[in-house]
Length: 438
Image (cartoon, rainbow, N blue to C red; front, side, top):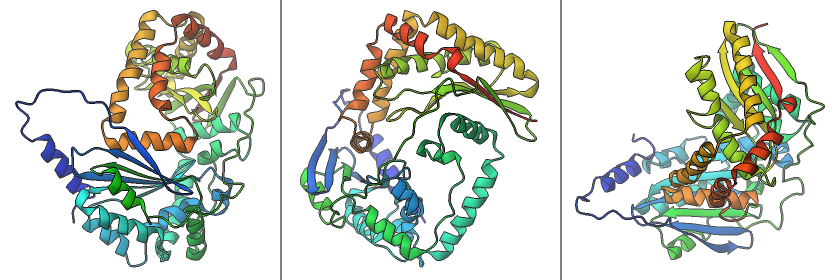
């Protein structure tokens, strides 16, 4: 049996190894996203690129695991189980096409993705239709997954990184906030195939769907491929389909220090954090530069102080979970137990000096150049360009938001950056969270 994507990889290698000795180098602009209305509830998108005879498909349904409706109706298992029919016929067909049909319930959407040879697209889409209408869910697989969910939850509570995250979300979020969901005990996995099929049937009809294609297709071919791929859309989604977020705890409500015990640890894990910004904040572009300088690369302030100069740890970084909504913001690192006090002192000192002194013009320019330059890595393939546009649309962001953000960040002058750093990185509003052996 060939591994998924084997044919695609072979084609890419063949094209890359073709005769190019006398070709002149050229820089082409990235392909553009073409768009059309498939029906009253569905948008079609295409990123056309004929360099390689490969096609990528992404179907996105605008309800995800953060949805109260999705949580109540077990959206996660209803979406994931679709490829697992009782006889294994759907997986057998995917294997024959050398493709993987990836079913991914996300926080705000539920996605189906695949990449295939252009000549296999019709067969791959026929498989997609059968997956989305499959009602023969493997009962044994559902029972296995239910047991695996229990084991995973039990195991996670013994992992230091998970315990750090759980402690952080319990400080910042109110009970029931979807942003804390991945750190709370999940409900038992539903195993009734009839009810799961009903959930899936409702989900894939909600308006706001996107059918996306990328690669070796013309617009006419993409229009034909999208036609009839999904059932007719429903008139509207239920009122509780969208996530509901509560207020974050204020700085005055949060402790300045907290230690959580975890048996049999030989290291101490640190999370020095606070609440993050969101895209709506005028300071978000400045925060992108600040994050990069403080903990976004190998020679960041944190890595120099904690790894290169002192050898306290292998890793230290900023983690910013903000975006559409404010969320967790923190500095993460770890060290051996005997070295905990020294590492904590260095961590606090790095933040204090960052807050008091800000950054230099050289650091600002280097960070801006990096943010702008690395955009090229995010648009190497037409599927990447498609994914970015679909994510923006599903998130309610303007088209091109992701592309423009790096330029906005790079354009923030040094004075504004350091004023922001002075406001946001005040050590008095950060909580020092530690997980260590009791």
